[in-house]
Length: 321
Image (cartoon, rainbow, N blue to C red; front, side, top):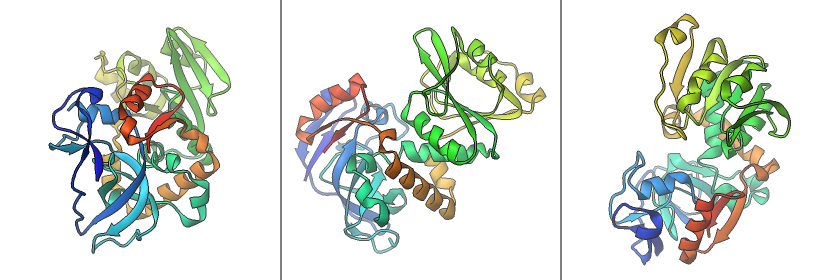
């Protein structure tokens, strides 16, 4: 089969090559998938460069997130069937065929399949489930206020819709140059604007939870904008600079601060919770495919052009088809 592989860590456009390699071996709890669409995510470049939490084993097939059709299943697999369309997230996705543990394979519901393009399905395993999982760990009652940073991101858009469905009041914090804007859940209505995070948030009521993808020097202002007993959930480090904070800030206001990673959440997630998450996310994407926008589609042989387009980061995700 054809696959995009690398034999050493480095920049993707320097170390990736298209090669004919043996198909992956199917284990008893695995699913073999004929891949039809693959999405280029920031984690892919980190993985190829050796900077991701998952490390390559050479020769390594690149890619994590993809969509396809089930070719065969291991003897212990029961929740997917041959011929079913699925999304999945597992190393080795940028190939004609891929194997993934059944626990990381997400069947497209039959009643929604006609409404879901492969370009949408291949994005399912990361951002939609991340958005749902973030609200799950935040444990907010109806009517609670939640702030989402990196407010123009795909996760923020998904969070806005999921929060509204759950009866929450969601707002999105966006940075453009030296300006910080506070937007409503839809990302269309301006609520406040200032030259730093603290001033932008001072104009609105405090939040029961903050879901932060940024980190860095703005974190103290995010903590200050939470109610006593509130929660900060960090799920990204776009800015990993250190900052100073006193323990008393957390202790005296009884605040909680936790990290979130999609794999950690999936590993501890109960089967009924994950089934609910999948159904709600599939339904949301069937109604609003624009929440996971697609910028371009390239054949795998044109991977260099696809990687260049993905690096430009304009207008949505770049797919390898």
